[in-house]
Image (cartoon, rainbow, N blue to C red; front, side, top):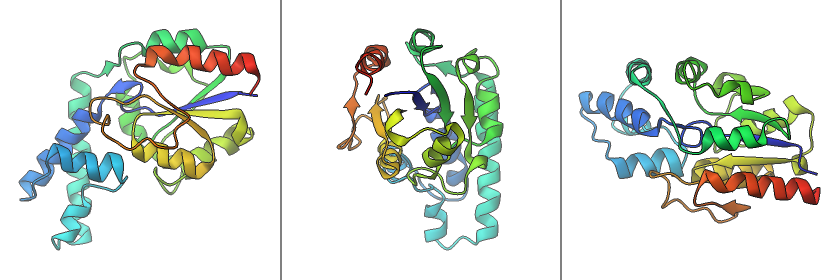
Length: 218
């Protein structure tokens, strides 16, 4: 029986992936490292690695990389404070499912950035819990974030489903042994989504899928 949905945040609920790419690219460019959009998609959204691996590969010291990450995080915060858009159809989808099933956010985002993002989205009241990167040791594509959500809810894996937008997120879901519905965005449409429970064209299709599963008690 389906009892819970674990939602990714960036690229699923809110349109923040482009800001994250821009912030990372800007800082790496200052360090003399070229990060193209395609390379960001490959490294971050498909492989689940850090774009700062490029700096490591070029011989930058761990101390310098820590500083670069700090500068990126600051730049990302600045971009987020300018404006964050809730993706089309998200609020309507959440309102349709609210109260019918337990819902939580499971994100690789830092809590600081998550809180900035949701300062004005009006979405958080739909969720029963939030897990950010500070709540676990290994980020997606490692399964630990979703396994942490399982422990948090006390539910079995078969009672849960995950909503993701990227290959990285899907790999984490598969490794955790949890069904995953993928809703690709402009940055992730070319990712490999083999093994997904469903791949949807739009978030508008999600309530029908979830309500169907609830009606079947599977």
